Length: 147
Image (cartoon, rainbow, N blue to C red; front, top):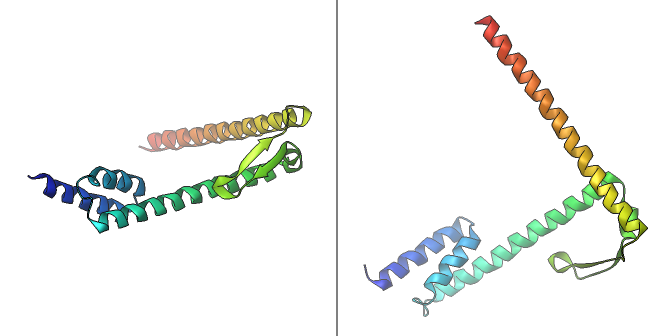
């Protein structure tokens, strides 16, 4: 198979990845074939769309993570404490930069609250897991005694 034909097949594979919303893999595939198909405008068009959609996807995930952290902070009831631990924020969205306040009492308290919240959540998970395991053993033993 000649190199032109293999480049076209690789381009089509990248196009399939793009249509399947696997933008990161599509970008890598289009970049591999870009040296052989420099004059193909569709290659550059779909490479640009892949990069654009990949960036949107990353920004969406970053915003979800940010919202999740805000919800967790509200649940832990230390939002007023955390506001005093930050000196300033610059930018918006994925470009946001947070400058922490100097180490001190408030920041130490925030770290302790976060650690306690995580530990209590882990304890709840362990308790739920042990209860589910006990219930499952009861079901299995009940089924064995009936048989």
